[in-house]
Amino acid sequence: MKNNNYKWILWVVVFIILAAFPRVFGIYYINFFAAFAIFSLYAVTLNLMLGYMGVLSFGHAMFFGTGAYATALALTHIQGFPLLPAVLVGGLAGGLLALILSPLLVRVTGTAFAMLTLAFGQLIFVLALKYREVTGGEDGIGGYPIPPLHIPGVASIDMTNQVNFYYFAVAVVAICLFILWFYTRTPFGNVVVGVRDNAMRLDYLGFNLPQTKAINLIVCGAFAGIAGAVHALLQKLVSTVGVLDINTSFAPIMMAYIGGVGSFLGPIIGSGVLHLLEDLVIRFTQRIGLVNGVVFILVVLYAPTGLVGLFGAAKAKWFHKEKVS
Amino acid sequence: MSPTAVLYVAQAIHGLAYGMLLFLLSSGLTMIFGMMGILNIAHASFAMLSAYFCYQVLVMTGNFWVALLIAPVVAGICGVLAERYLLRAVHKQGHLAELLITVGIMMVILEIVKIFWGSESLVVKVPPSLSGLVNFAGLTYPVYRFFVIGLSIAILGIMGLILFKTRLGKIVRAAVSDADMVNALGINTPVVFMLVFGIGTWLAGIAGVVAGPLLTVFPGMADQLGMDAFVVVVVGGFGSLGGAFIVALFLGELNAYGIQFIPRLAPILMFAFMAIVLAFKPMGLFGQRE
Image (tube, rainbow over all chains, first blue to last red; front, side, top):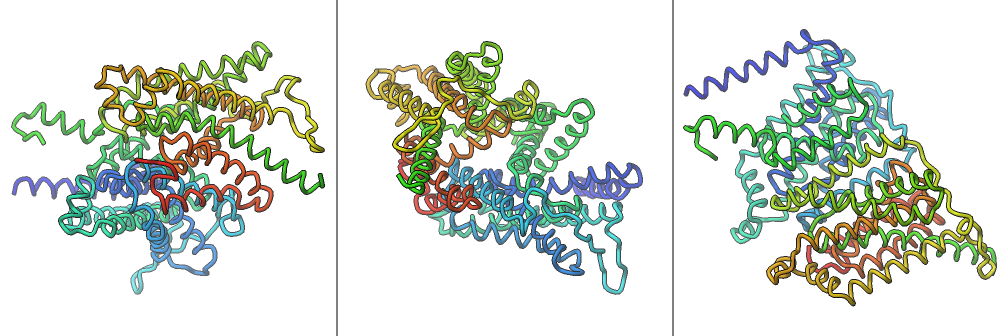
């Protein structure tokens, strides 16, 4: 009971911080926080594959980028396309891509899975680069209108206002994160973890292995696509190097690893740490990749369970009464 | 020969040269994977590092042959150090951690290269003895590409002799099929691993130096070469040298003729080929295990 009360207080505090954020910090940090939220969602979908299902998606940017492109294309070509469907189109595109690839992807595990996703990620990157009639090639798509949020009979909220957009982005990400969190708690979510731990045993127990994997892939793809869609709305520009390239694939892997693989909160913490680090480093040097690379190597070397794991170990060490998990 | 036939033959030699280059690069990659189970994402980065070393030696001495000798060795030493102090430390954590360490190494090498040499393309000049054109059955062709083919065949011949005719080669081949058993027989496998990693990086280094004059030396080189080498290793089957050889040559030709006939789709062909092969054979064409 006491524990439950703490939880409620924590949620209220988080809510107040999120609501008051634009009032306290300037425009720059609003966009900073929105980008952090989008990448948190993106990294969580990667972790649903890496930490929960036990396969490393090395071309995760294809889901993110497809979602971003789908939203940008819909807004460019369809007059007066509303906001929420624009976000859903991104999710749909990501999910559809995962659905198309799933017959191939469910057959492989381990390094082969990483290579296959890397190959498809590159395939889509090159496709987007070459078909410039549709995607704009290296220049990408920009200048599409950002529609207002229509709530029928109540109001129409202007989304070109950055504070309004901040609330919208954070709300979308929060809803998606809640759905995903709920998803990991369902019996189906537990089966997915079973695939990681002992696939053969699950097979013998009568669970349908390929379908389970495929559904998880589609869920991950769809939510990564939603993250991409919100990213497209935030940046107002979608280009191959920004949303489909290999660095966009590496970013969520680093976030998940730094925060802690297999914990739901881990990638969110990792995303925060990486964004703060980048914000800090960029004031001194342009060599953000060097700092990221070194931090990443150090984390893999010395803290394979990430920050969440370190925190857990510290808690177990200092409060002996807590059960060591 | 008629002009069209000349064009076809020229493209075939083009493809052969690129295929041999790819095999030089991917032979090290597939050997490292076969023995240690590590997919070395940083493999092509070491090749790029070697190409920059080559540029540096050229600036300092002006002699391409000295650069060809020194640069790959230095890259190989970098590889050995990376294996000894980074990869071995995470060996216990499994293959995923090793894969991620190599991603980190790749990022660091990319930035180091940018810090020391900048982001521009650097031109590596080949010596006059290699820079001319040769007349070959009515077709004039750059000597340098023939040199690439010849050098690759020579090095791979030597590597083949070592691998199949010496005691060390026997140990390496045994370790590819079962590293634990070789260790149990009293052979110091960590040292063998380190050696193979060093030789693999050295081979990548040679590929990097040789690729320098063809592609120019620039920070995106690792991505360009690396992606092709991964496709070779994955399609050929992890750890299979013969598979890598066949697929490297095939991809070289596919690339050359693809650029001639369907220039827009050429970069996609390779990945499409990989997707088709993996759809039917998840282990690759000649792979026995994952």
